[in-house]
Image (cartoon, rainbow, N blue to C red; front, side, top):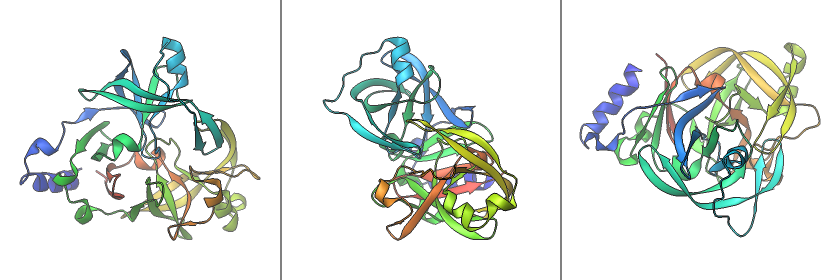
Length: 297
């Protein structure tokens, strides 16, 4: 922690501390970052999700509290890891969070329990540089003008062309490098294209167990195993969990279907990296420009 905080304090000294929010505590629930919010006068939880390019509102939360927010005239198609579905879109939903009263647009999704109200994605996250202190369960917001992320970044990271979510290059078991969506809303370690695991024989080499993965639209069967090492920025992690879709199932990772397993802006996206890896670090992420820094205590 000390290294990154010293760097940020130095940069802020010339531009006043108004550019940095106070630390906000968050709850870590099943690998999700959750903060308290109020939606249409009802208190609930928000999930901070760097892998989402929309804001989502939980269908179960709406139904439990009998909320009737204003709807957009047409539905929109939402692509999740396990499929595509038409969803209701809401507008001007009264939202109180971080001491601000806002009116935001949301898409109705299925996630979490009835007390989880919303997912905050790109429309909110791209407004600031965000610092997630996982070991101490706290976060804060930084103005883009208050920190030079181009100089302090230590992750090979960029925004995905045409979509905008942050992608980061990691090394898997010293055998291959892949680009993954950096996803604070995922509770997995690495959710990976099955093709990558099959190409390297990992499903035969390492013990495999079966499970179920839940996306925003539906669930899917998965295979899970662990690899000895994962290179993430300047750090090397050991015994990292990998999840892949079951044989014959295509995972989309939010792309248009015809972009899956292709090169998007010369970069192939092969999955996502989530909580089981991020929990060890203080993560500073510039969503808008696709820059990141990690530090371990």
